[in-house]
Figure 1 (tube, rainbow, N blue to C red):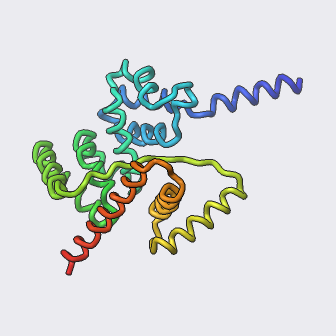
Figure 2: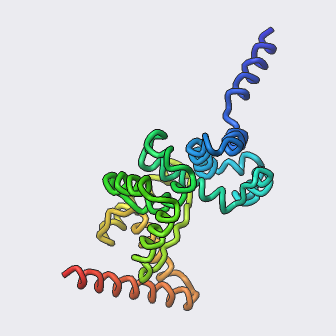
Figure 3: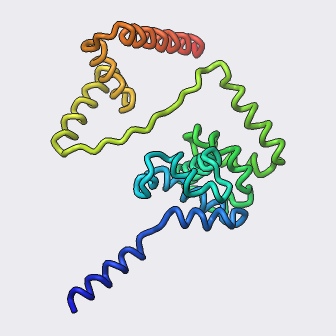
Length: 230
């Protein structure tokens, strides 16, 4: 009797576990109504690396095998990921943006992610609501052109799982690096630590020279920017 109850409990737990892939497929089939939900689920799939649970080595492999029959290419999937990230970052409610439609929101999602101020976000959404799709597309291009002389910065996501003792060591190192680099940005601090290590231990002169050139380039850019502000 106890074994039967245990099995029933296990089945109930399995049923309760979310199948993100199936939820996403359902949303895509009703895209006009559920684009907000599909964006959030796409971001959750990406954030939690759902493809690993399904036995795929990469997000691209996962999309090509699980979603392409719905007309979802990897590029389109990543559009939805960005949309979901923007919704989650600024806690945007469905009734605030649903009238935009997924095409308009897709166009402004990347611009939203570049904002930090809530007022700027509200202003951008209001502008998008007033514009036609073509006007919004041109507006986004113009916004991008403002930064045409600045280098495009790509990001890399890294995740580490450490033992408590290892975490303490890493945190102490990051705090110290923040002091040396005179920054509160942990990303900069980590880069500082890695750069210092490579400069002191790498035997590859080409790598060392590249790092040195990059440091000089960034320092020069910082000086020029400070000069323009004056």
